[in-house]
Length: 474
Image (cartoon, one colour):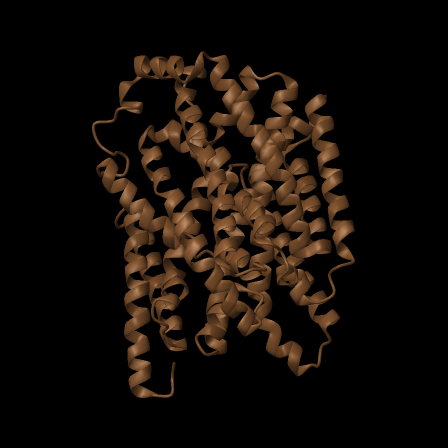
C-alpha cells in the first residue's frame, strides 16, 4: 500500500508542474528551449538525469549480471566522454545555436551547413525512426515497473504513466521537463542510497565480492574482456571514443542548444554536474553482478535483476522509493527525448507554416500536435507488443544513431563541411549500418565504429567535392 501511495502522489505532483509552467509558454522558443534562459547549473542537473537515465538503473545492472566486470571498463570510458563533450562542445553549440536562432538538432545541423530541405527531411526522419523505438522501450519499462506498485495490469500502468508524461510535457515544454527532471534527480539519488543500503545489508562490498568469487571467479576476474573480445584497456579506449560521439544524440544536443550561458565557468559547472551523476553507475553494475548470489536460479531477462533484488530484500517503503527512482530514470529518458524529437520533426513543417502565414501561437499548437502523434504511435506499439523492457535495443538504437549523425554534428566544430557533405554522411553511413545489422556482420560495437568512420569520411569527401563543383559552398 505504501509504494502505491508514494507513486500516486508523485504522479499527481508531476501534473501540477505542467500546470505551473504552462503560462510561460508562448512561442516555439519558449516551448522547445525555454527561451535559452536556463542556467548551466539548472540545465546540468536536468542533463544529469538524462545522461544516467534508464540504462543506469536497469540496463547497467542487467549488463553486469550478463557480462560481469567488463561493464566497469566500458563505464570508465563514459565519464571522460561526457566531460569532453560537455566542456568543449556545449558552449560552442549554444553560441552557434543562438546565432542561427534554431530550436532543434535538425535546425542546427541544417542551418550550420547552409540550409537545404533534403538535409532537414533526412535528419528529421532518421531521428524520428530511431527515437520511436526508445519511446516504446521507455513505456514498456514503465508498465513493467509500475504494474506491481500500482496494483494494476501492465497495460494500465503503461497508460497511466504515459499519460502523465505527455500531459506535463505538452503544457510546460522544456521548463516542465527540466523541473521534473531535477525533482526526479532527488529520487534517483535516494535510489542510489537504497542500492548502497542493499550492499551494506549483505555485508558490504567485501563480503558480496567474496560470495561472487566463490560462485564464479570469472565474473569479477575474467580471462579476457569478454563479451567484447578485447583487453580491458582496449574496451576502455573504444568506449571512450564511442561515448564522445554518443553525445551527438539529438536529445543530448538539445540541452546544449538550450544553455543560457557560454562562459568557461558556465561550461565547467554544466560539465561537473553532468558527469557527477555518472559516478553512481559502478554501484548499479556491481549490484547486478551480485544478482547471481542474491537471487535463486538464472534470470531469463537480465534487465529484471534490479527490481527482483529489491522485491526480494527491501521493505515496502524502500521498494516504493526505488520504484519512483527507476520511474524517474525512465521518465527522463522519455520526456526529454520526446521534446527533442518533436522539435526535429517540427522543422519539416516550418516551410508550410510560413507559406500559410501561421502565427507563433498556431506554430506552437502544431508542434504540440506532432508531440501527441509521436507519443500515440509509441503507446500503441508498446501496448500491442510483449512487455519486455528492451533496454538493450534502446541503447543499441542510440549508439547506431549517434554513429550515423556524429560526422556532421561534432566534426562541424573541427572543420565545417557543406550541406551535401552532411546529407551524404548521414545517408551513406545509415545504409552501411543497416546492411551490417541485417546481414549480422560484426558485433554491435564494430558496426557502430564502421558507420562512424564512414560518416566522418563521407562528410569530408562529399564536402570537398561540393566545394570543388560549387566554390560558393561553405
